[in-house]
Length: 451
Ligand code: F0G
Image 1 (cartoon, rainbow, N blue to C red):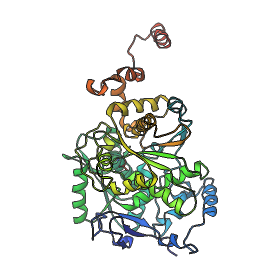
Image 2 (cartoon, protein in one colour):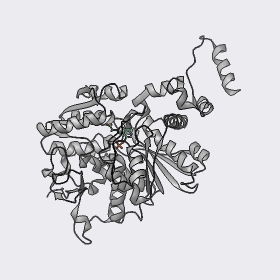
Image 3 (cartoon, rainbow, N blue to C red):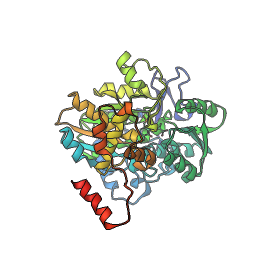
Image 4 (cartoon, rainbow, N blue to C red):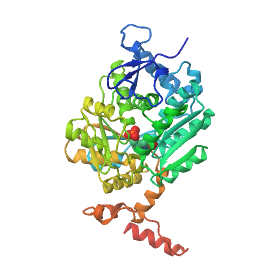
């Protein structure tokens, strides 16, 4: 019996096709929009394929004490809600998911929000949330017999893809913007054996080029235009709902780059709601960097009907994207849940990152936009003190150590960027001190700090 219950539905025109019929660039042949995975059996009230909510909650909890490989994955533990493979035996896992949910006590106190949490997706095998999607899409690539996989990336997708491809025995091709990605990420792609090409182009240019390449050669595209990536990336929604005993938090805040992640989390919560596992969806807000904010503009200027690409600039290189592929899907997640979409400055990102770090929760600059965005929403009165809020931290702090060191040394931001917040930044900086190797010198530093 096949485990496969899915079909693909075009997000734009609603056309339905079988999974294997998708074009190499995953665009609809009729209207050019992206596909979403759909499970027709779920709509039938009494059909055999419609999952039973009570039984699923019990089964998923049981699997947490199982030693079976797929049960130990925080993605495949929920496999009843991602029947995308002919056989779950084809699934390839690095034991992704099952990431920690931390209570952010100090930030909560400062903001006057009791229930503030961080879902740390940087605690995945390659240090970012991409692993939850990669396990799903690489498994499809392997089952369909591809030898080569490829992605354009700002760094994390390539690190993740290279690792999963290596484990699956597949070859991988990475296109990255020359000089605009963090070294930690580039080093991973090299280490995991990818063919890595640094192009004189930005992320959007890399993705455009790769789209042409996959149309000419039998290479499986693993960017988030690939709908199977989003199936894996929806599972943190299940983990979050489970962690709150299936009473979803009021508000989920997600960084926005190519906008696959916010789309996927929206789909995850939507499916839980439609299947009766939770009573409602959380509000989903997306935060972008001010220099890379095409979705913010599009929602403000034309209510999400048309996206004008921008030339992207931000030191949060993971989200340095001006023409996001999944913007329509992300706009739907925001609009249907009553969420917000706003942008934050370079100084706001750097300060939020340092505040999270000071709570013992390091993350990438791109992840810190969530806390920076929440501070803004709270200041505007859009979030009340009684709400339960979850920030999605997408990447590990060691991905971009240069950024962190530059911040603490005081060389990250320029005078224009820090204007008005110099004192706040100064209070957050913890630069290393050079001193004589004597007890007196070290102890004097402590006195200095305490005083
Ligand atoms: N945070 C991190 C750490 C990321 O690496 C990315 C995207 C995002 C947030 C934004 O997520 O694109 O789904 O809206 N990184 C991609 C990459 C583009 O190539 O690694 P998104």
